[in-house]
Image (cartoon, rainbow, N blue to C red; front, top):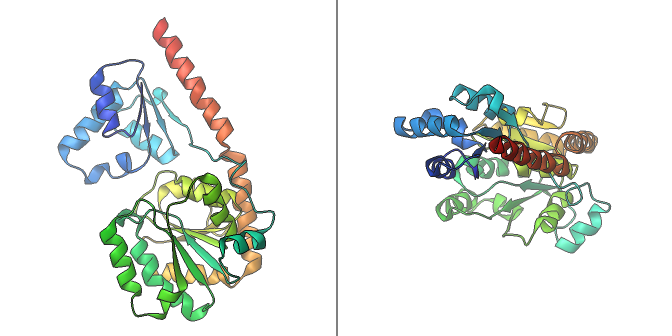
Length: 292
């Protein structure tokens, strides 16, 4: 039995009493544990002790799992990985932009869900500052997995400002290939949540060869070195977000250099084929252990 998420599915898996039992920590289930109730924390520790094996999508999460009671020799970092056959730098960015009708100006892509934890309101507040310096820029904002009230607040911040003309909303896309094309069409990707495990969307953007502006949280440090694959900004730092975007939009050479390093990092460390094979090996190892 494999439960994804220490909470919810993890609780149910542990209560089922089925073995071998594997649980995967993805992010907020452990990162935000200190903010939860005592009952919530107790159940989480119970799941980690009950599990025969714990996989984590980041080194930071693995450290947290061990601190919460998981056996150190039963904890392993297993990344989700990126399908490099789909997510890769474009052969012809201009052609993709033309097909998607995105114009010729600089494009900044917000890649996270429209929910409070991802701090998209900070991006909305930063947009007018960016457009003052780079008026031809356009922000593309994914609107999948929407919190309707949060989307309304996002639009309200832009209402009546020139910034509203520099924003386009991208509704849910059909598949990974369609998502990849938006990454490939853009110049910068931005992700500024308050907490993160190993954000797959950030890895996908990096695989497509574009630099990222990301919040300075532990999960991002495994993939991004500041000034190498992208730029870090403090959580809630609206001015820092706008300045980072302006800097990248104003320096094509820097964008290309960071984008190339980002692609190489993902190609070396996050190939989906490698990590899916490791996941399968863990299944076989646990099954063999149970049969002894």
